[in-house]
Image (cartoon, rainbow, N blue to C red; front, side, top):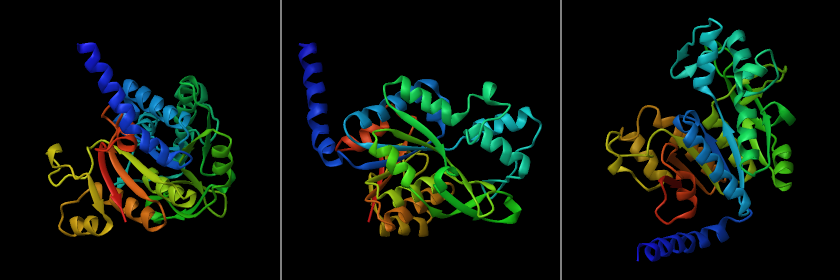
Length: 296
């Protein structure tokens, strides 16, 4: 009897997913990956396998990543103090070199010891049965930028996006894995916030979805109560929540990134908990979802 129930549940899940698989077949989905889901090896394995599954059924995922904890680890190893200003990493020349090496923007003396984030993710996807190609924002002029504030050093704002390399990879059936290092007009590398970069790439690609994987359930009316999760929001409702201080702190730049991407043509943006097993699949392929969806 229990086996029949289990089989029925499995079939029900597949039946629920079918209309979403049909709707998003051939569509591009940009996933920003980071936080606890990137540090926990078992969670990382699930995320990677979910990403490969999406690719296998005809959805076109693009994985965008940062690497804050790994950057901090290597700054500590080489004796550089990590400094932050208004939540942003102060990135002097020495720190920028570590950022590039850790994220995988170029080869270095750390190549054989750091297990660079970008190439590590590429390897995991390929082992899981996908076909991933790693690039950074400098490659193909994918991300061009300018210094945001001299006090922050080489922290950049995106000024232009060229997705021709990404489109070529997607058209070939590959999963692009993008490290968020941009380049200014002189060729100087810039450290770009991964949420921001993912939003800009999603807009330029005309993505169906932008998904930000975080360490919280989504947008909650009470940040300490996961039961207060808001499943769906419009842009106007989101702005009202910010004005009323319901959305505050570190959630503000995330929802601003979502709102901007939708204003630029992305169909929907999602903030989900990367710590929850299979949250990526649940958000895309089920009725209830797994986080907060923001639409126009």
